[in-house]
Length: 67
Image (cartoon, rainbow, N blue to C red; front, side, top):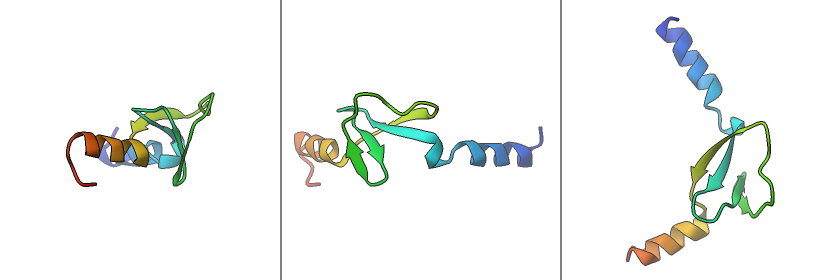
């Protein structure tokens, strides 16, 4: 596989709409700019982890940061 073909396949796979983003602290699921508590995660998509705004603020306070 050429480097160009590899770069194209990586760009195709790593599109945000292919992933379900889950907060690593509270398990809320991101939907656009919203984070919702859900009983089940959407199927058929890869899962990646992030941090929701509420957990981010809590962690910043815990660490003594001013965010």
